Length: 270
Ligand SMILES: Nc1ncnc2c1ncn2[C@@H]1O[C@H](COP(=O)(O)OP(=O)(O)OP(=O)(O)O)[C@@H](O)[C@H]1O
Image (cartoon, rainbow, N blue to C red; front, side, top):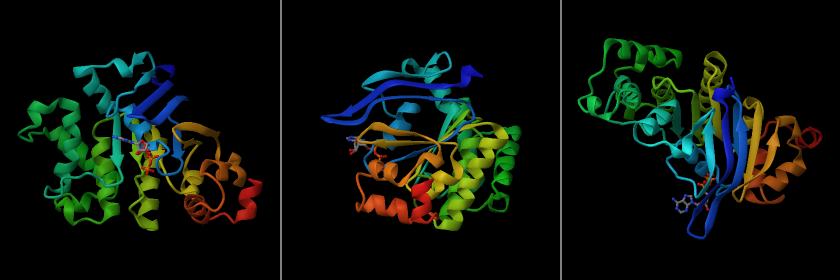
């Protein structure tokens, strides 16, 4: 399975004088469910965007098995973007189009831009889209305009769209940050079932510790572009959490801690 391991080696990305991602090295095994946590501005989004080449590294290398992702061009780059689907905090659906068509947009990545300009999709692709919607409990909304759905429903449509890309990796950039707790749970459960049933690697940026603890096999924390923690939920002691969020009493530390369902003494002992 090593051909599906994601290797991030010494990756740095600067924006002017700002180093958003600073010499990050991580190996991610196929099928892992990895949560990335850290304060606002820690570099989490930039790291995910580096992985699907929405952002180019200033230095360092990303490989997927033997493939050098950072060197891919043209068709090979498009193929890589199909393989690592991404979902976003704001869902990024086309609101005036119906749900089914939005899901089919995921097929554009699979069969190239030109042929999809006219939105022509095969019966097999329609079937694939309906199956993806069914998995996410959204079939009954297939013909509804995307803009009329709730946030949680829109995010599930976005996951269905990502699924029809037939990806190997699912990147999720704060997918539940705009959702109420019930919808957040449904979206995280959907990511978990994709991870477990399809063996997809999932990398998800999260800003609440309880979610990271509950869902992730592995938690990676970033601070000022660097990895400051890489372990399992049980190793996230209160002291580690304080370091990640820049000290007790900061708003983000308080938010991360108070949003956790574990009482503080238990967190300290974990
Ligand atoms: N396109 C850009 N141009 C300039 N600076 C950028 C750009 N993208 C990110 N940055 C800067 O890089 C740093 C890391 O940003 P990034 O969005 O990756 O952090 P984050 O951990 O995802 O934060 P948040 O949780 O708020 O989304 C920040 O200081 C940000 O301002």
